[in-house]
Amino acid sequence: MADTVIATSTRPDGTVISPMRLAEAQLTKAVLAARDGSPMLALDLAEAALNHERRSQPSLLLVASEVAHELEYRSPADGAEFRNHLRTLSAPVA
Image (cartoon, rainbow, N blue to C red; front, side, top):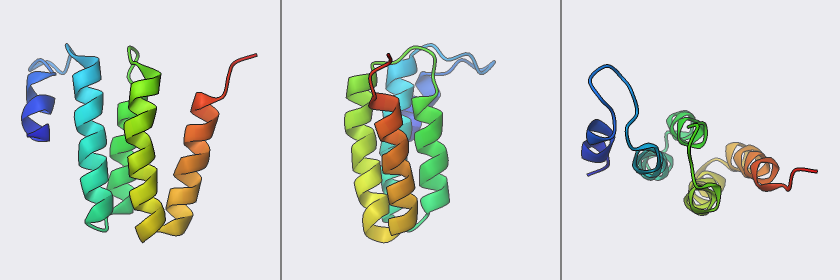
């Protein structure tokens, strides 16, 4: 399902037409990659999801926290590093 959402959220030329749907699908795939024992793939997918220009940060951070949880369970060091990254993203800008 996530692959279908990714395919329909991007034009053939690579232009993103549905950034939130794309980001959520990438985070879903990141959770699955973490569960499958592929922390680097999970981190790459999660970072790609969090780097889109248009996004609803609270919604994405909620799903990204699930990625962090799965990483912490299977790869504690990667999980802790990703969780710290999420904290910096959610910190208020002064």
